[in-house]
Length: 191
View (tube, rainbow, N blue to C red):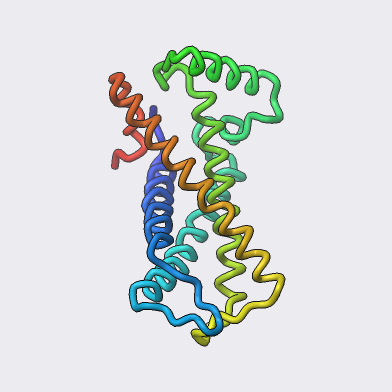
């Protein structure tokens, strides 16, 4: 598979950024009135907030690449839900996967593209809600927030485990492909 330089850079930045976000979420605690944070919890929260802002900027750039028609294989590859032909290709790939037949991604990558698109949507939801939290939680260290911001925080926290699941499936699929000799899955990281 051949990816353009911007796609390779954006994918790498998103992959590294989301991995750091997920790791920081394991040690952080959100400041709240009356809650004393350990230095590690406070550092994790600050790192999560600032890395999240950087990841959001990269996601916005990725969406700009998409909507300007520069996406690898086109935007429909990642969001096939509105095309009967693309949706049928995804369903065919899914049937093969249910039969434990893993095709070479050079020939059959419709389901992979659709799953990648879903991952981009989940990351974008997390990024957008994270930006709201960044500006909505009091920055004076006490973590005060309005009821609306609290609802956004709960929505944001709901999508975290979804991203963990996505990352596990995405990395696991890459390992299966590598185990089957499909080295082309690494081409998105070639510089």
